[in-house]
Picture (cartoon, rainbow, N blue to C red):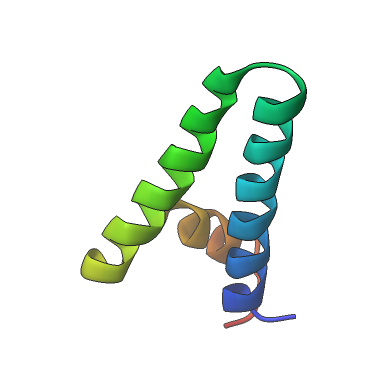
Length: 62
């Protein structure tokens, strides 16, 4: 599995987790979904994502 597939999978999982927690527990969990969305947006403009740096240090292949 490549680094970009892991990145997209992690972002999708975090969005779904935030939505599920907001529905089941508290609407404040929507802040997690908003954070992930804003991070994806800034990544589109800057081509930098914190998770990519972590995955590269873990040795995940490009």
